[in-house]
Length: 404
Image (spheres, rainbow, N blue to C red):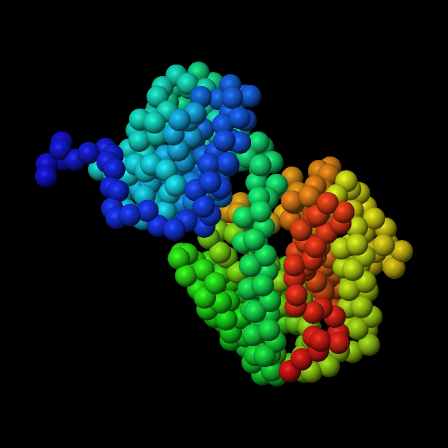
């Protein structure tokens, strides 16, 4: 093949379509909602570039490795744009069409996008994802009449879960519990954080494969922290060995087709001292109070202020380092975030039936204070017509979580 005969793009529809995370009707409904938002904002075509939105509207969760990907949505089409290195997998895992772009000429990705959108159109983009570099290329290749930030509308859609999504999230919460019990069984004095974390991860991946035999398996992980390493919610696992009386933090994160769920629990190794027990019990009380506030009609800010008051009355508010909970769905620690549904002072979103949100208060006491360490409990709740359903089953508190 000569250099001049190499194509910019092609369709490599290799094999049959695979079973996607949801039925085709689910994706049809999502696209219909997006197209209504597009019509309302005068958008001719959306060029969705984030992992979460590409997966949400097409079913395909890409692996970038430095290459751009997209899901292009028009009034008639839904086309994923993928790199040649992935061969036919994006076609098999997309609900609609797929175009493969080649590496033979720089920016073939944008030529493939242009083949779907056409030039001079009103283009919907994700303002919170499109980089300066790719933004300039979009303007150069598509020559849009104008651009509209469609990211807020897509986030609002993702915040409101369908029945199918809730079923998947419920299964994920069950899997997180499986990982929690495996970790509890692995905790012993002298064991390393990494070994305990692997026990939880392996148990969850086995359970995901049992429940979802047609899925792709990727990204399930555990953070298991001990001692000073519990002070941050996102501290990586280390090789530190557990010591008698250590505060521990159990965090299991199953990933099912891009859908994230979580279980987080405070634990102690062997025994818990009085100062630590008092802080732990206070955080458990905060957790229970916070969960009682989650119901339709209340705003995220209102919940946050009430929990703040609860902690302030106990002289503990100064140990809080972040918000009290967030939405669940297509998100991960490296992509996605429904920032409009977080329990923070600056979020005025009102809770509605069908939303899914966590309650996860955390108190971090510095190393030189009695009861030093990070205390965090985390449950997932589905907002219902008259309250909330807690779908996390693993117990919290000292009665169950002083182990090893």
